[in-house]
Figure 1 (cartoon, rainbow, N blue to C red):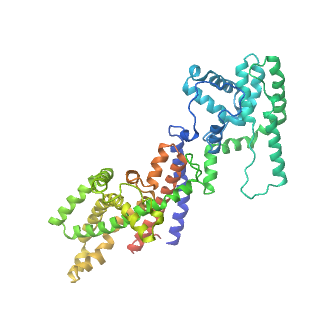
Figure 2: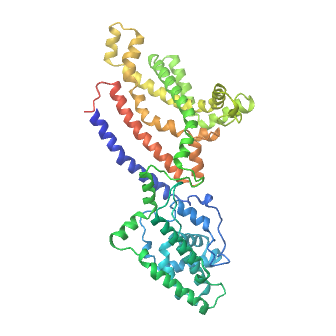
Length: 486
């Protein structure tokens, strides 16, 4: 048993890695701009009035850089960025939507921001070539100053930087002051003769720093592999960090944990009630096979199974909450719960979650009871059950001690999926009753293109599914001594 358990645990690691890669691929290759609503700003119709303004679009650039959206997905070959491609992007941004078109303008503007320091080499090379195109040259200068700007290192609270770190920060500040100085820019109406000295200064500036932005050999391959969205995602995940929400900037793990009590408060009681009732009803139907009670119970359960949960939830909400005012329409607890005692708070929560629990329970009850009935029917027809009856054992002993253990094996199979369902909650039920659990978090994150949260939930559900399947095998061995994992 121990050897089997160790092998299964070792298999979980590559399986989870494969699932995480698949989840990441599905989310990043999906259409839409992640966090577009959170980044703010609409689509401009043309270039800014001041082509050398460093503040234009700073919030959107910082947003994309913070969440790793400003890098290629898998392979980064921007160290060989052609200056013709950069020039084409500058022309598209300068022409604006009327000339370049909405899609091209948006793509070019995003590329010029995302290229960052990789665009310094082609931009410096373009400055003297654009001498006779003042507006395009000014646009190149704007992005050159923007992408040459460096950000100081961020230290945790209470951390005292070393002498080397302080010297590095001072050098960053000095370079930023130089970039922002009037000597490194020109007025929009400047003549070519007035622009030439500035171009020369930028060329000299780049000559001093070109080696810092040049990659070769193994360093080039390593940079192309690591400076990507995929590498950033995996480096964070390896540390147990699922990233931050693009929508709220909260840690994904904290957001999931904060919703834990809502989903578990619904799922755990509903799960226990559904399984207990399913076992009782399934055993009753199997021991009263083809009786009027069995057929009537089958009709009722089939009818419940055929009713979608959103229909049942809407009906119960309108009838018991709106018309009869027996239960609240939505929410997990009352607004005045802060001043309540613990028993009063529990009563208030139970009062709020009764209707969602009904919707949560009946669908599982209908299907699980049929599984329990089918498993018991197969076992009750076996020879060892007839032998037990022939020995004169009571019917209760035959059913619950001898038949139930083998008949419940079909229900044990479903336990593999029960664990993630307990945690993931129900999207429809939580949405209808406005309960801020995992289901509601999932649908909100999908609408907002907040794929960090969606991926975090999917990874947790995948891991729980793998653990559930392992527990199912172990329960098999505990319930049936004939099963061996040697």
